[in-house]
Amino acid sequence: MTEYGRGPGSEPWHPGDPLYGDQGWEGQQQYPHPQQASQYGHEGQGYADPYGQGGGQGYGGDPYQQQAQQQYQQQPPQQQYVDPQYQQHHQQQFQQPQQYETGYPGGGYDTPGQLGQQYDGNWETGQAAMAYGAPPADPYGGQNPDLYGTPEAYPPPQPPGRRQNPPEPVVDWAPEEEAHPEPEPEEEKHPFFTGGDDEDDDYHEEPGRGRGRGSRDDDRERRSKAKKRKGKNGVACLVVALVLVGGVGGIGYFGYQFWQGEFGAAPDYTGSGSGEVQVEIPKAAGGYEIGNILKKAGVVKSVDAFVSAQQKNPRGLSIQAGAYTLKKEMSAESAVTLMLNPVSQANLIIPEGKRNAWVYEKLDERLDLAPGTTKKIALAKADSLGLPDWAKNHEEVKDPLEGFLFPASYPVAKGTKPEDALRKMVSRANQEYTKLDLNAKAKALGLKGPWELVTVASLVQVEGKYKHDFDKVARVVYNRLKPGNMETVGRLEFDSTVNYLKGQSTLDVGTVDDLRKIDDPYNTYKVIGLIPGPISNPGIEAVNSAMNPADGPWYYFVSINENKTVFSVTNEEHNRNVAEYEKQRKQGQ
Image 1 (cartoon, rainbow, N blue to C red):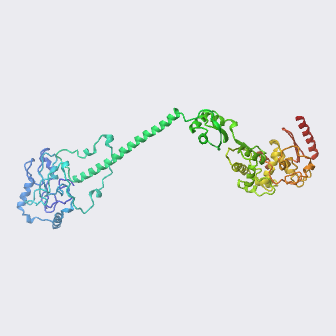
Image 2: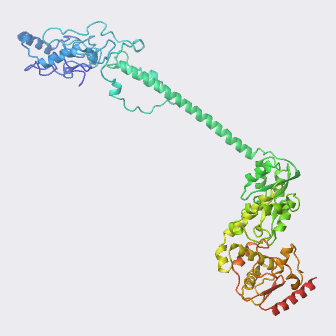
């Protein structure tokens, strides 16, 4: 419904309104719509108020108003029919004015009969007369009482800067903002980027124009939105500032790193250093980890200096794990060069076939311990050094760790505890043995378990001088252990076992008759069957040969030289081979 037929408020039409409808005006001609009245005037002059101003700058009077007055004179007002239900409802509406929301500073909306100002002919459409409009003519010839007709009810419009908020009326319903929520506002463009002024934009209106109904609510909404925009604008500025500060900080940091990498030299010592220090480099250690170890030991001054020197050296990346004997306060370049020199390597290398007694002596020397210290610790703590269950609790074993100090290179720097070094060796043996199915292979070869298989491997390692002979030597061992063996009658008869029990290593062990007099479980010239335990630390090749012996009927063998090992089936043949061996040995002297 437009503003031409009623006021802008929510109050119903007055029954006296000629445009109210057919009630009370049956058979009467209705007033034309204000838009139709434009045919009687022209733009700029307006038209006569359809509610009966009776003049103005229009066309000299409203003919419809005159017709209505003549009809009123012919038909008395008391004969006019008015719907009693509507009249009762209309009275209730005016008896409860507090139920309507105020739209103007004086309170109340403009309704027919509640008027404040005359129509201004300078307005183009005449809507101002509807907003502040003139009172309509009473179709009954009289004037309707203005229930709000006091000067305080309709004060003249004030400029935005001088308006005062009236007391808020008590309303029985939720505020309009809740009943009719505003649509989602469009994305804001902060004046920081656009150059606009949000507050001034709220009051850019044409002079002389009223702000219409609900203007006070609009003011509050605009002020609320302005505060929200200020808050958002502040947050936006803060975010921009943080981004700028963070960007500058990030650029400065990476710029510093770039400058350091390109132009800034890392702290470094000069010269080849002095004194002596041992360091241990773990497996798979990279340049930075090695540099940290050296820096903590006082070898180099900074990690970056070491990494840079390592990268510049063509062989720098070939530095292996192990123990190194270095000097303190070395230049990074000197440290890298010395670590690449085998002289600096402080690793303890256990060759294949060495007995535990040899390993214990080397550990005592490396760790500056009294002779015999490591052996005592080994025998006392053997069960706590990581032996597998199948390697424990064997009777008549001279050294429970024999065969488990696996041949390899171990970092042993000064200050290392003997038990820690031994534990590394046992752990390495477990790793290697676990890779092999020792138990199944032992049963297939007629042995009691992995312990006996490792014992056979230790014999193969010592008796077979050359690896290409290991498979045949392993077959000789198994052939001699057979109960039906008539050549050795089940005895192994190896000189290596006699040397082990005597703690020596020699080719001249004595005559067979003298050897059989030695009462020891490791004396293979006297005892039948396998010895109690390993007599050396076999390498992986000897273990594999013990698991996979060659096929053959041999009971004897002798290594004449490096490239010639002679295997035989009978003792007579073997004696001839031994004579040949003695001849070449004497010629070599």
